[in-house]
Image 1 (cartoon, helix red, strand yellow):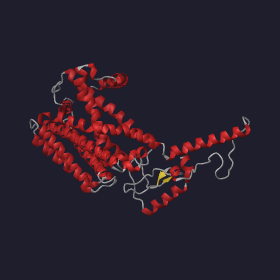
Image 2 (cartoon, rainbow, N blue to C red):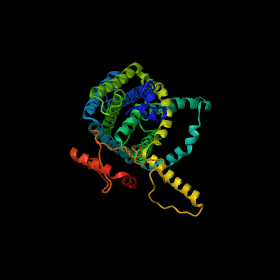
Image 3 (cartoon, rainbow, N blue to C red):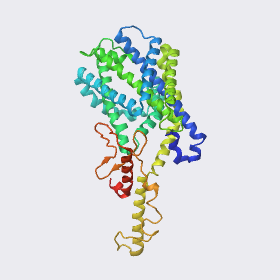
Image 4 (cartoon, rainbow, N blue to C red):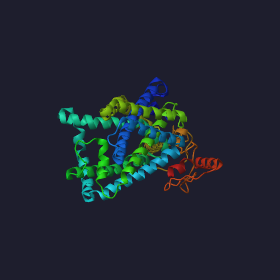
Length: 445
């Protein structure tokens, strides 16, 4: 589980496991470290703003931010000790439910009719303007230059800096999934939800600003906007506390998952890095966030943004090459090899038929001598054809699949996400049974 491993198909094992591969992993660590630290610093600023507003304690101070980050770091350590299957999983599920609940509350207590009209038109406007916005550059003038510096380049760099740890972490928990499932589960469905969430929250802010709602101004600090929006909604004096909880959980899960990935990258790809390594990277991230906030003072947010941009640029080059390497890697996938085998077999059969009988022939499947026939020169029983990405449990042990009943051997329930305890002997038996099914059954599935 190293970022450099994707380049093995492109550059070979020697370069990938040598200095070049280590350099890629170092870039991934640096991008993850500073990109996540910046996100944690911004989250801490927003939590601090919420605490100040809710408690009425006045202006947010650096000491308050340090205390907030320290408390959240303790929460992250507890989550890290609990492991991925418990700590991050439970907190992430809770955060999703709470976030969807907050968006739903804002939708129904805010300008509902305005938002229902805004969402579809905004999505179509976004799609229609996308190519025009993508074509804009610094030549458009100072206004475009300022906007792209504050938004386009910053968020471009932020997504790049998060890509190593998010990609590796998702790969770790998605082993055995198809590309279609992965794309639906990590890109299309979440992006669709984000369209709605950003539309609801942003649309409500715009509506309140145009309506002259108290506390909503054009020059207010970014971390205060969310709480000012909530303050103008009726009947929900308790909602700011939930928002603070959501932000805190985000901080904890981001630090935990990023630390796990950096632990992998610094432990030669070990999927279960030692606990002290994970905690070390989490503390380093928190330390960087604290230092940037203390040094930046009123310019802390701008300093964090510039830090993300600077550290993401080298990794952008790595990502471009990784796209090429990934497509080349896909050509060695067992399914891709089998499909090419099928195409080769049919072509060979047709070619031989035309050579022997011209146009007057039909295809009939009969046994041929070894080395002859449609599949000549291809050993379809080779591991490169028959191997599959084996789904594993949280301990890394292979899990069998029953192609008749369509159930996993560990009894995984997709609806509840629960996995009952299964004796190791049963897992081993199921695994052997799955292997015995052969390529034919796998192809039918």
